[in-house]
Image 1 (cartoon, rainbow, N blue to C red):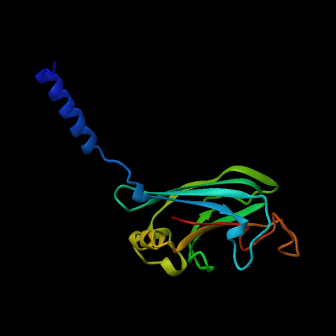
Image 2 (cartoon, rainbow, N blue to C red; image 1 turned 180 degrees about the vertical axis):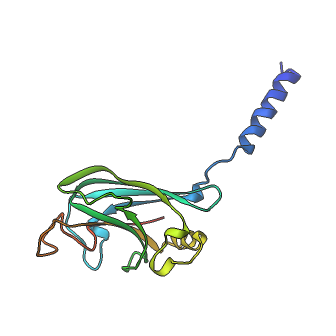
Image 3 (cartoon, one colour; image 1 turned 90 degrees about the vertical axis):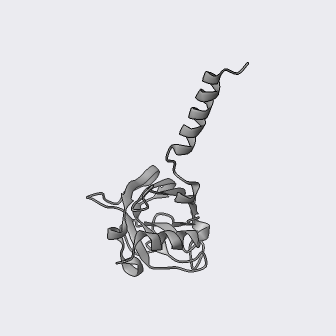
Length: 172
């Protein structure tokens, strides 16, 4: 038997669920990174990674997390403007920042975690609002790649020495 108190409680609980602010799935962007997505030629590497971007509720900043597995000598990570079939210019430098430095040897774990806003844009996005980058992400025109450098020449000598990027992932 339903009492007016139980019905009222159910209605209040349901209303609270709808009133609570929640992060929309539309504001979460991810990519799986590997060498096969690198251009102009795929990179033969055991390294993989993931990246997750979360748009703030007010749409003014993006939090990010980059995790890698079996990556040798990571030296930097950037977000680029470019479709899956093209290389593009850097739009946001993600790592290293704030005194962080390149890593030597094999690394597995969280490589970078932080946030950025439109004031952090470089290259083709400099001076643009964050909403412009979000539009590019939703259109499939952005990717993250992680560069590696072993500290010695010649460049591109194998895993751990791909200065233009060893793993890449298109954001969606």
